[in-house]
Length: 552
Image 1 (cartoon, rainbow, N blue to C red):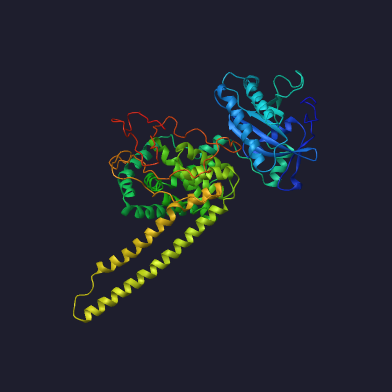
Image 2 (cartoon, rainbow, N blue to C red):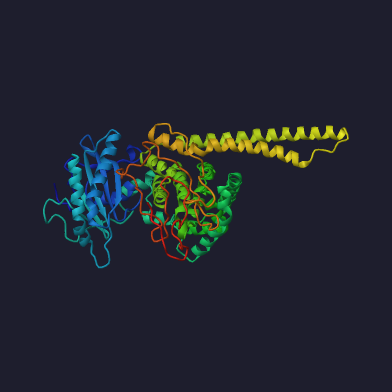
């Protein structure tokens, strides 16, 4: 093993190859400096406060990059042994399930210095974590051949063979975009985004003065919409209103001029969506069948405006409405995954689970995305549902026409006999009967189709029927209180199908991050996925009390 400052690398099995989309884009890495520069291209973003493991597979005496695993660095060093164990075990066993156990590992620890701290201080502070990673990988017979700490624009190695191998102040990182790998990645079309913090910022709720106005709009909309959603006779009408409104906003987004830059584009979208529209959409999407129909806007010209709308709605789930963000965040994750953007998909789905850990659709999609499954199976199901509903609508229109014609003929016959013509109400009743019958059939099919499809894709097993879209009603214990407008009608996702719960040790993808609603009023969940109400069982709790429930 040679010094890290020398040209020849320390890798005992030879060079490491980074493969692009084909052999033409293969790049060979020979030094730790090139390894450190490669990390953003391996992940697709620049990691912060992260520990990353990269698997190496031996091919002809050369290491080829395999799976990647990343977790945030726990704030408490007491959690480091568990994090190292989960990270190593998750990546190695996940690679084995795919048929290729790694031969070696490369570890990266990335963290910027805190106030009054130097990069060297970060290296020393994180050294126990690096050692635990090497030990855990060694227990699984996969040695870590290089462990780098990246901090403050410099890097250090924890695998120096001698004390004088690397300078105390580390070695400088190359300028972004100037390496051979950067050029090869640009040629191959590989994009490197900013940090995960910048990506999450597009989905986090507002913390500006406008947040209070949005909260008031949500309170107001809840007074009228929540009772209607809980009413079986009104729920279908609310669903149609929600979907029509969403289509209008998507059209507005699609017709708006292009705005460069993610932050500016999001601000422009926020200006195109008023508070009342956002409130109606957020509350309407709490109905599962409505959400599943909205998930059909997943490809083609609909995908872009839909993703922008779901992001905008997630940003509007302010204050005590943080848990309501599970629906738009899950839809954002689904559309991103369907469009091939796995990075945003994982982050959005992880944030959805942070908003509501019991949200079954997010849990199923999160596992499916983490397992590297093809979203086409879900797309096929949603396309079929859309076609079936369109066919049903056409059949209903024919039935309505026939019923109207029959009523008119009967009216003509009666009038011919000198009796009063049939009242208009009779025709309306016939039309309503046809529509109600088709609506019931639609609900029966749509209520479970999307989650069943995802569960089948994840576990390979058929999933039994789910419960009704809404449970409970009125002001029963644990149910949303229509008088307050603050409760969230709880979709009855039902029990998690066997094998469909995301494995906690799977850390080779973004795992559920911290709850989005930190510092905001929480919500008490029912143990059975039934309706929930903020402040239930806590007399006197209100929006100004500062009291927060505990999540069970």
